Image (tube, one colour):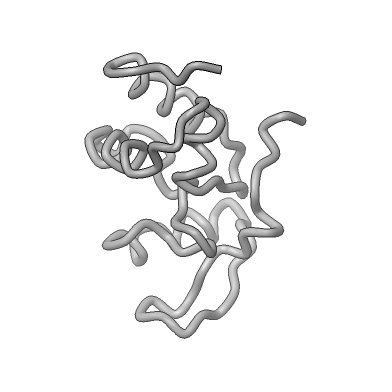
Length: 107
């Protein structure tokens, strides 16, 4: 699969993010991989520029850590969607239980 580029890549990222069901997550790398790319940072850039119009909290950092700088804003979304959370020795004190909450896009 050839990864989309430019505006097509941004639109494809947002399509994937919009498809993630409530209570489930993917990492930035997972989203990139679904698009045939290794550009996890580019996924982050697309998300940052999306203006919050998409379910940004469903895209997490590796290990299930919420988006950097948005930990306190993300938690109410996780709680409302019953996303499985775990205590973590981080500043925000939690992370998503990634192994449980990871969306299997092929099913």
